Image 1 (cartoon, rainbow, N blue to C red):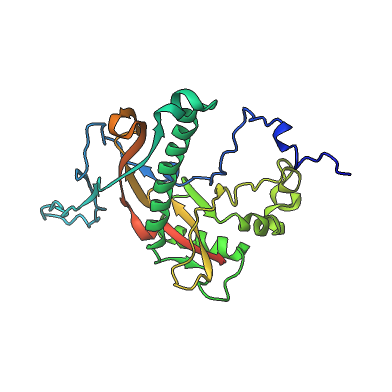
Image 2: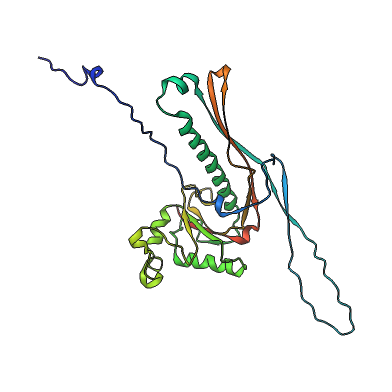
Length: 289
């Protein structure tokens, strides 16, 4: 004798679509706010516009000699340029009936946020890519012998920047998330006897600034320069290493396209990224892949 089952009577089982949507996890985006944002790039700027930042040289000091005219100095100055050379878009079509009748969800709202995130992630990745090319100063190795971050690597990076007269203020560090565990495992960075009482990493689970420099973690952090991924490109840098110009935030449009019988939801950005002070203001911190 047969029994009723959930298979034979599946059509009797009601299905419910919840109000909640499962949004894809997002990377921590950290670099855009940490580099020099060039002022004066107005909303009227267009692709191809070039902005010039003139330099101011150091001057020399000379002896004052009796009965000898003082000669003025005339340094030949150069400039640093920033070109708005990158335009990106992120777009999708929402069918008319899906937008108006069939979906219980606010499709436009949820994907508007995702468009903004996708474009912001593109900017962050572009900044990482430019940082990756500045390899004058390094700590750690981009080989199969690469290790997790060490106290000696951090101090070595500080020494490099100090000897280059890079200001202590506005320095930052950023690593791939696996280095959080390595940092929390270094006694100098977590024990009260070294850092004093307070927001101890063991109690809070947070990584406090290392020697006063804020530390960020992001999965956007790329692999090292070698074609074989031996390492991750961690960074110790000053905010004036790179510069970015962006006329405005994401330009978002929502228009009905009759021939597609759909609404076009599209966001675009225009920006330019270049070296400001360049390789002297960053140390590549190669850590284990």
